[in-house]
Image 1 (cartoon, rainbow, N blue to C red):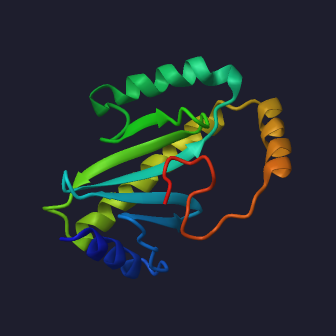
Image 2 (tube, rainbow, N blue to C red):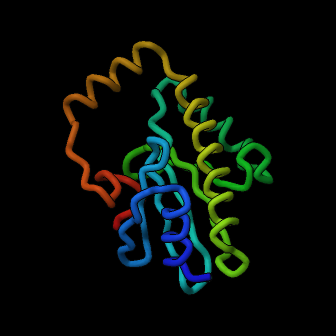
Length: 161
């Protein structure tokens, strides 16, 4: 099945406004999480990515260790990869699926499982935050709050669409 068919079928199945497909990529807000999809025509795959947040400085070492152990043989990441954007230090979850065996139903189930996994890791990240680092985040958010354009990732995100 083609990337565009999967994306539009997925959106229709869950009552989400169809994502703008721009240069082989689409972005959706799903359950309050920004999720991006990228078509790799050469490899015949689709990559899905969701930013899960920013770690507090005091948890970087411990969180990095937890993430690396979870990535080992995908032991705790359910087949996805936990990573950090080197430009923004935002943590993300990424996963790639072959397009060939996918139909809309399987794709939708994969996306739902991926989002549940991303929410789990977002909770892990939030659990490592101290009250002080959470307050700093709120202060920074208020100072740097920029309007988001629908259909694109916020500035500094993993995907540029």
